[in-house]
Length: 246
Image 1 (cartoon, rainbow, N blue to C red):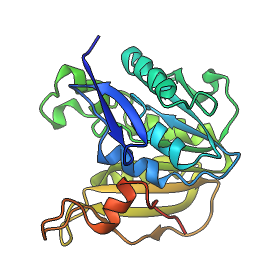
Image 2: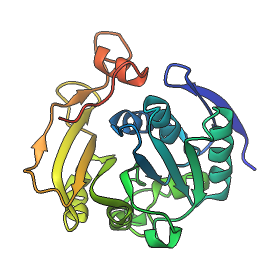
Image 3: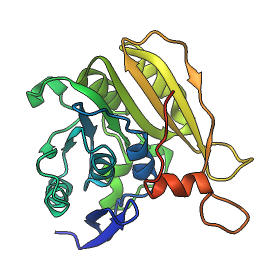
């Protein structure tokens, strides 16, 4: 068993036990949670939830919704289940063993109102130096990005939403992977600093949606003036604001 740390996220409202080495929830997980806009009574799935960083933060942000996380790594799965209990969210949050490489129907669950994911950023082992063994599963998508978009598209009902955070240079692949089943795309670029190219995008799609694609105002994370984060990013990370879709 890997050594773990217990951290506080969402301005201390979420206790998160996670590996001390390997994949650890960070900005991407926080932004994914902030992008979840599930309404009261709705059901949300997170594919590849890891130890539950985004899943639990989204659940705390949206107290009227219920959440299911799917995770294939046994150690991450155990940590996520432990974190659900640690935060007293057993009545609204469940974590199950599952793999996006297996059809969603195999889970035996009804379609969700919304699904979200932070897929591994790479699917070509030749494209980068091999990551540390404990990071491989989080960094390398064995079935490619298309496995994730296909799984998420199947996981939601007609009219349901799909939200993904990923590398900005994979935007075309994200849109292509989702477009057979989904539309009404909204794309929010995420920039480390103003004036620099976006490194992340948050994409939201509606299953069977037909509205034109909308490019939303960018989120800038860091301020060159000395503060660690811009005021907008700080409010989002603390849970005082969300990432609105309109």
